[in-house]
Image 1 (tube, one colour):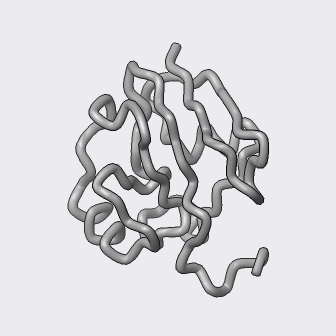
Image 2 (cartoon, rainbow, N blue to C red):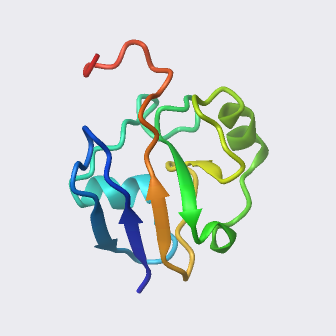
Length: 112
């Protein structure tokens, strides 16, 4: 069973986290199931970029991003070549190391 290793994030998971996940679940769903509150303003419908994550290890084990995800990613804060929307990226068979960016472009977040 693959693991997702979340690097420390000041607000969402200050200590970092390591969780076991089933292949085929989205990164966002796995995080939320384990109490890691990744923002997802569009309710995981690929209509915003608030769940943007950077895959530091294991990127190639994820399926390719669809065009809708790539179009949304163009609007993400801190976009990198290994960026994905966690609501769209399905966990494959390898471990992942995930960085949650410090900021999102969601200016109406309840946390701001």
